[in-house]
Length: 340
Image (cartoon, rainbow, N blue to C red; front, side):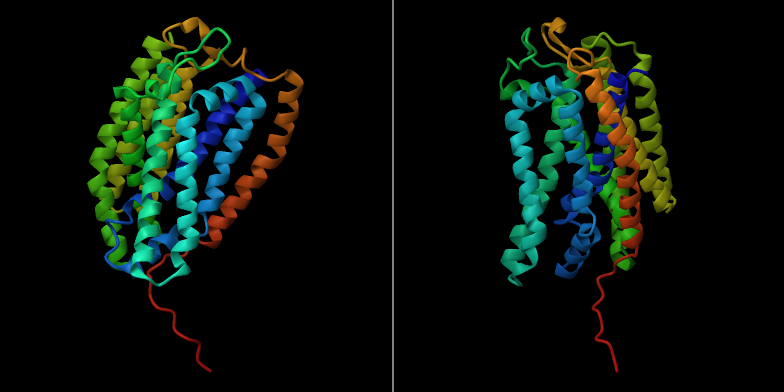
């Protein structure tokens, strides 16, 4: 395996980690207007992701930094061509971050309702745009002979790419409901489980439709052998179906693990459909960016590999420890004052 292939796989791993971890954050935010019955329960939902959401977003920084360092041409084309879309994601993420900090600054119902709505807006909008953006990598965007984006903002929208955005939204909502079954207690936990079951069928339908179409797009638009994207796509669909069955049986932990696996395999389907390209050019396929013509020098990739081997395990261990520390379930009960 060459260093270019290694870093292509690592970047896929970083994006998969981001969507698995930030996915349930987004899902919890999308459920804020529907699942809680009162302000106390809304506070429980915020508290369930409060200690971990900022750590989850580190994966986005790592994925972006790895792309910049390992494939600078890909990074430049992606962040210039998708500039408005990525800027909108940044705004939505900032609004969402501010909502965590400012919601508790006042007891006013209107104030809290406003920032709760802001969190929901960011949690819904960001995965929608992420899905559209990743679908465009494979469907193809107008690139000139220099690898520069030659289209406009509206060229990013098609039936397939919008389906990708909707699939991300629905599946993250399902993922978030599953997360809440592991983090809450009592009636709130039961309603989270029922919500997960209600979202299961839409998540399976939209997810399977997007994955099957992704395989077709990889074959038609990227001259890809059908087996390469079809294997992870089929595995992702099986994982989602098993997650639904286990959710119905009340095996919430295994169900959540399988939805996480389904997300990772879905990202794997996109990257398997892309290889050996990183961005497909349409209509001029010859202008596509590949891992060879967009990668950094061999020495740069070698240094990055050493850094990744040292720090990636440390990040994984630290984040795992964080989730272990904050593993207790939340019920929202009032805390009694200590007695003498």
